[in-house]
Image 1 (cartoon, rainbow, N blue to C red):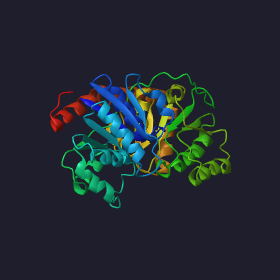
Image 2 (image 1 turned 30 degrees about the vertical axis):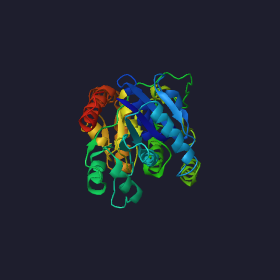
Image 3 (image 1 turned 120 degrees about the vertical axis):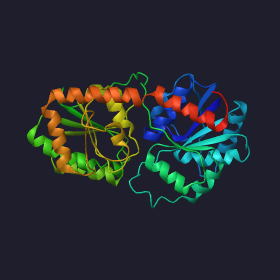
Image 4 (image 1 turned 45 degrees about the vertical axis):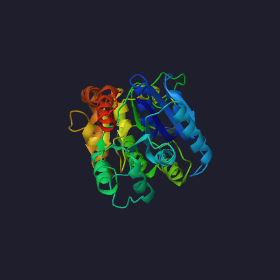
Length: 362
């Protein structure tokens, strides 16, 4: 099998990380594994395995004939069988398939606002789905949506998976007191509901003033970001809540943290939860998307309903107070992630599915 992943950018995000994860994992499994970036490079470039073939298209507009031509030449030169297109990159994959009809397209749906899909209408995607050989959905809800809305019969739910990141030279030094740090890895977008995090931090500060909150994720320098930072100032939390932006070595920050949290309104299956588990951190998260597939009981972590400030603050207080509970939760979540959300288990299922679709041996 000769396969390439295609993604719009390499800025840190769930879809982008999974494109890199698949390319890296298949470098040791497939005859050829490539990664194509259409619009923007970014921090994840340094995460790409040296055995992965890489191409940057420098796409400038929705229909960019230069980018399509460059992609077509690359696919022909490397005799590619399958394009695995992530999120909105399906469009350029379909354009190139019109001139290379033998190529198969697998579309990977990473849509993060999955709590209400009734308003998700995309005619371009619907028509493009006629050209898909198969669809991967990152949650059961998205799978059901694809079955009811798109015109591709072969749809599978595959969980996101986590793998060890390459060691980065960039070292992150966290503020706050050692041994009393809470981390949140989530881009600064409204669906991540950082407002709940800041309100919880305000409550925690009153009872546990030595504990601090550390926010990692892309800062889009927009009104949402401005509102969050203003709220931190208004509540006088500047020595409690810290913004770090994107980093190429979130693993360094995780190693310095004691608790991982996620406060989202909406998710698919968040990679942050898997990263916390792999780093042996206890987790408090909101019960959205497929979070409960990872944390399905209080043995593995604590989950509360979306936007429940009282429940979230109380869950945090519970594991701040009880260090033994933190250790138990962390160990159980680590074991769950290793067993069910590792590269080995997901890639094995992915390969079997591909074989059933295109009858090639990988």
